[in-house]
Amino acid sequence: MPRTFNPGHRPSQPLFPDALVYTTVAKVVQYLQLPDTEPVALGGDTSISGSNIRIPITGADYRRWGFVTGDVIKVYDDVNAKGIDYTINGSQSAGSSGLVWLLAPESQNNAFTKANNAFVQPSSILTDSNERGITKSGVENLIKKRQDYIDTITRMAWRPRIVVDEYKNFTTFKPYRRRYYTDYVGAVYLNNRNIRQILKMGVWQGDYYRELAAGRVELLVDKTHKMADTDKIYLCPNVGHIGTLQATQSTSVSTTKWIRDFGKKSVADEIAGLINEDVDTSKAAIQIGSLTQNGANLNVSNEYLATGNSDEGDGVVVISSMREGEDGTNSTIAVNQKNSFIFSRGNEIAVDLLTETGTPTTSFTTSDASGMVQGSGLFYIEGLNGVVHVALGSRDDDTITITTDLTSSFAANVGGLSAITIDSGGIGYTSAPTVSISGGSGVNATATAAVTNGAVSSLTINNAGSAYLSTDTNIAVSFSGGGGTGVSVTASVGKIKQYRFKTDITDEQRQKDWWAIEDNGAILFNNQYPFFENHSLKVSYIYGERYLDKVIEDVCTKLVVRDVLMSDDYTTLFPEGTQNISLDAKIQKLDEESKRLLIPYQETIIVAGVGG
Image (cartoon, rainbow, N blue to C red; front, top):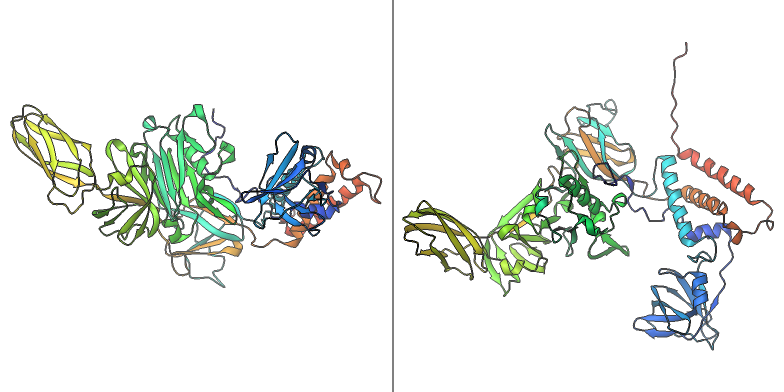
């Protein structure tokens, strides 16, 4: 049985669920006035290994403090009393000595020795040790929980939150008709204010939702019985890196692949869940190549938004770029097996091959490629038996340079024949003639013929060859044997193709198609607008205050401190009887103060009744 029973929508949630925004572990420690950490004596002299310094401590100290990657430590000795701060990037057993090496980047060849009384001091008393009560990761989880609590109580956010497919009814109601904003047809108000970005906006046009904001494509899951574990979907956001989504069977479940079993709807949900990094379906992040942003991996879920089996129909995955306007339409998509999927709602551009450079091909020129994205994008050639040859390349006007041959077959198939069209089947054939292909710029193309009622009825390309050009006018296909005559055919060279994202309308501007008042969540329509029907508008967007209110920081810190004090392990850090106020009184005081501070941020609904 499936684990989820809703359509493949990305849940409404914080855009970065694991980010600590409203407070930090350090602020919680500071509020609790916990004592500084005790220094730990080094178990030996430090040493350099490659670009890292190795800091030896005893196994007992390692387990006691629970050092993990990302922890900041200070190392000092009598020679360097001020010490140096290091960020741990790993740990390693020092062998049978009973020591553990803490590893950290080191570029100055600094050294600390046991003879000079070297010590290492953790920056926080809260660590991930299992021997010291409440842990650092435990406090981080409390912060995440309290961030969600504050968002729920206030119906606001001081961090980016994403809402997917919020449905609205459209009317010509004009709240500002008498005073302001008379240059529009109608308006809607979203459920949340402080809109940071409209990700996508579909307006109902009687037969489908016309997209006014996002570049998107629709991916129809087709022949699931022909899918294999080698099937891949490639996404490129107009940079020199790609996100790869690969298939697998249900018997070898992977959090970084989509399951290809159980039919079109299940596959569509799997693909949408993987793109969205949906934890409900146990999907993990897929990094776009080796891209990072602000020190963190840039994942497919940071660039794309997907829904499966929604208004567009069963087995359809709608993939939208989270980049605005034209930036979103510069995304490209490709698959390595044509039989598995059908594209729609995007733009397929096909161009002729004019010249080639390199053996195998490293670059080529084409006919008018103005419809393709400038810079990095995905290019493909449709090969034989549904196979698609895909490459990451870079376009500069009509010149395309291959960056990465993703299927290890693109370069070898540039300039292959795509079809041999029968102009006349001839007469008098008693058996299939032998087919020979010569001339033109290319080599190695082969084909076989079939005969029906004395005429050549079909031709099958067995090897498409390579290096043929669309300008070749002398590609000759000849026939020998078989007893007949009069066959004439025309050979065509395969086109270079690209499928890019598309939006129906991009005029977000006052007195154009639509515009938004982000502060109060209003969207106003002018030239383009939905039908006057229920649920005729569906919007996905990111909302949240751009700056953290200090009061919210204070509330979150106090709520987490309250949770820490209520922990069963508090006595390891806060022995009762040494303070003027009991722990129970402190907990009650923190609870009351937090609620009081949140009152101005909570909405009040007043229902006025009619007396009788």
